[in-house]
Image (cartoon, rainbow, N blue to C red; front, side, top):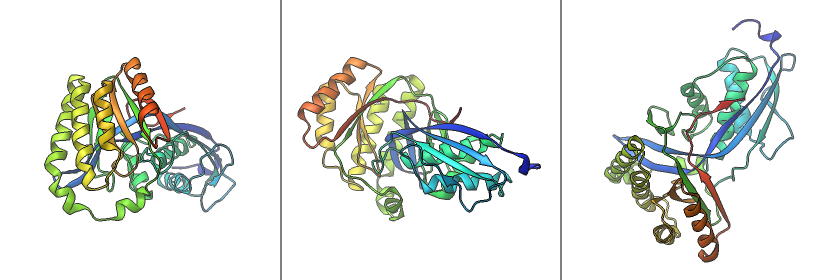
Length: 303
């Protein structure tokens, strides 16, 4: 790319967070997840200054986000685009809680990548966003369009399952946090190989549910994966949440497989979801926060 010193630009991008994953485990010997993007977004704004060299993109003071990983991703994006001598500032604004399994870090990173590219006048396809994000840390697949099967460690598998049918998720947070990066350093392959048949069943149901526009099948698949994950990261609240979901009309539950939140999955029925929120707040001990979100298509949007 030529003329980099004349480039001066500013761009913003938004990336969705998640309610954990619809499924996570091993398929055909490869670790992967099924994404569960929600309508809570991390927004990154990048401003480039060609006369300002840097070792890493300097962070601005606006907004609650202040992620060194996003800065590293912004710098890697400029390197990828042949603009290594560029410098600038990065602002992050995100409502996503940290350490809960809601892809807060991946959303910051993915938004920063697309905003940085946009500030140079370039566009980067989802697979490049994934490649750069994975060079920073293991990543959720929220940069892939719609709902997707994604290899969150090496990016070898990326398969779009389709646009999710209208669905809501009631997200329950009972406190605590998990360091996802530390969690992913532990070798759990023996467990995952043993659980692979359940992952295969879960993904098959989810894929079928998306193809047919059937939330019930998606909920059944997600529940299979959530229960299987108890052998890897036990959540003492899952059984109670499953019982609550049956009483409140949910089609199933899902979890953050390397986090703490639990989701109750509903068709796009606002009264049902609202009723579940009210019952959870009234009955569930130790509940620190409840969020009601829609499941949306993945992908990072340049603004």
